[in-house]
Image 1 (cartoon, helix red, strand yellow):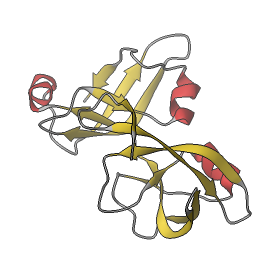
Image 2 (image 1 turned 135 degrees about the vertical axis):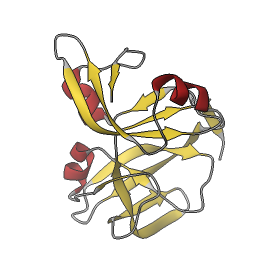
Image 3 (image 1 turned 90 degrees about the horizontal axis):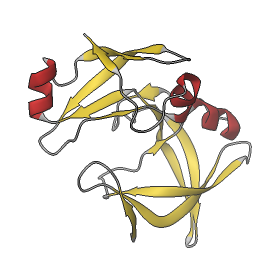
Length: 161
């Protein structure tokens, strides 16, 4: 893969290469960017809205938990591949390094709530904490959650334990 741009988490990137996702009713989403680095498995993370557009119902899961998840066809310049499973809606989660985890008093895989202030104030429940040596503090929401709350990259929130 060719690095298009580096992502916030160290070592992760958006590739220049893109694919088309095709659902069972032949509905498609084009120009879906591939993220790296490579993993041992192929995983597609969609929002609920993307699932509806493709005619599938991906389960909400932690990254890597792909057993019995949705199937999809990936189409690229060299042909197509049918994934029998691998499509999920990623669970809400927060990446944080060990020092941030100590500062917030949380443990790896702990479930917390996160409160966003503002005109469309909201508290997201069932947010998983993911602690890693190289992780930088960042919450990951899908576009449906972020748009519903009017949340933008860089917004501040309150961790509620």
